[in-house]
Length: 164
Figure 1 (spheres, rainbow, N blue to C red):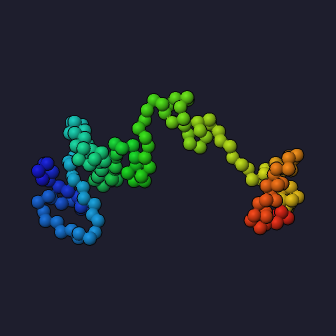
Figure 2: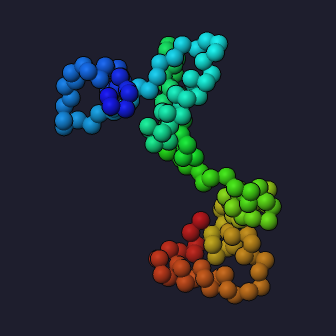
């Protein structure tokens, strides 16, 4: 009341500050200050801006706008979505530089493509066992490394190389 507000919304219902409110102290309540009530018409632009600015200051950078017969709109100065919680860092020029990884796509690293393994290319013939060369990239290798890895894994984890 000392700050000039006359209404609050408690759990979605608007009350006059002077009105007696009985709240269950064992239940978490959603309490919001009603900063202003506006009718959208010509000439209220300045008042609207001031009300939003005041709301952001009062609400710690978060403002809710309850549109009559409409949706509840939420806005944040914190580069975060109030509804789902996803947040972003503040935009900076380095995010738009091709020389900086800060703004790069996390999936491709900013290269525009990403590597994926196609299981059908790795194991083209599912009727073959590991010993019979089921893993295609290892069949053409002259190295003994991959067969040794498979033997070691089969011994360690107790599976047969004849498994398909």
